[in-house]
Image (cartoon, rainbow, N blue to C red; front, side, top):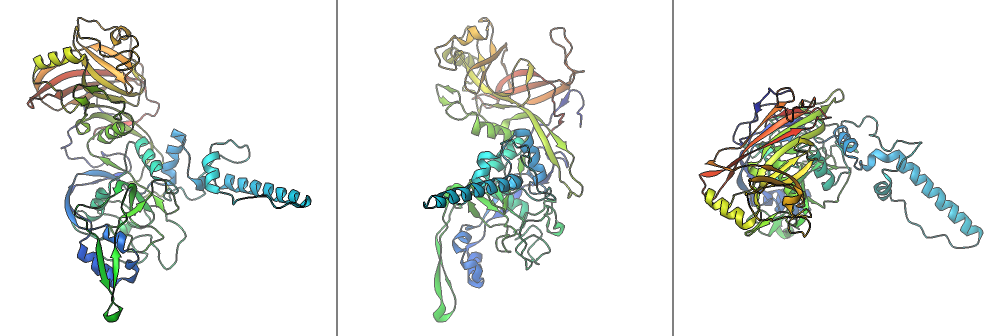
Length: 563
């Protein structure tokens, strides 16, 4: 999809998303008031009536107490991530594929191991010695060490024949999160999962409250299947928005730690009748380091497939019944900005001023983003898509500039040298200014300001920043430092004092964008113009400035879109 020249991207989070305008392969889930968890009385009845539930009394009690939460709108993948979808990530990012994709090489390595072990035993017996110490061949450990080894006889990895549309499994939490970030998405929260299943009602399952084995979800039926089904195999079990397999098939990772709900209480349930009545302790073993997985799997029955089931899993866990799906916020760039703050602009590298660590406002992010897709195999369910890549350029402002007016800003700049405005992050190289892909902290430096940073990073004893970036001391400047505080770019810039308004981004194709230096823009390049307003302490007014980047041509040819 090519946007019209000069198209102003819709950046207000309050705007209602349009159908088909979310990331590829997602459905729109409207937010609203949602029943989260299960009432304690309902758990007690479940344990009383169902002997199978007593074994899980502690885990079931973790669903209490029930509460009503307002959940924001979001996008959710229509299916669990499949082998076919995950393969695009593996090939593009060069990461380790699941163990099941290397079975032929693992089998060959196992044969070599056993052959060598038998040879050693034979030699030991010939010399009348005891058999050498040995241990079973660890298939998972071998794959983790040798998955990227070259082999002339066997492919490095391959999706088992006919399993392209099966949910990818043997992926741990970090694998799932890495895929999500590569694809311009994120893992859903536990609350979002329950919203997707329950909507405005307290539904037990995505389709309602009734249950019939084999009709709505892939669970432990009488046939006792040995694995998951292709995604979308149970269309009658889809949610009202068109998300498949939210119950059954494979467990799904969420971003939520396994912590108690507010007001949680330890409970003891009395079960049985007469002299057979006895107590059942229901104490959940919470652990903030674990993550919640939801939805049940082909190994479990209806009890685990409920919307409110909270199962805890170590983040390193990877099994044949555990996969994931992704979500996305409706505010463009919010997920990427949060990921940057978590993994790049961590507290130990983030800029500091006289008040402490600079605070950013990811919820006010301005973003231009787009996806590339690959052709999916025949027979995909509705809403399914294979993401082949994701590109984005975003700016996230500081939460507030600690000045009440232009005079206060001047005094702040004179005292501190650099005043933080926000951070810029781009997955594409910029031709003008010349910036490689990466994240940059953006500052304002007043004219005649004192030196506050150096080429070795803020606070370093190397050459002054002004010398490295050739800053004219008679002019105000925007200064860009990389995520570690090293100088990257400076350009003259005045901050205007205006009524606060939403920031925006405008982009143009090469043919419509202005030329610089008398040279035509490279074919396929784009000019992105950020018109930004950062809040001040006054509340009603803020500081406005502009930032332009000419992006290098994109090899992925993504379809840029507003959200």
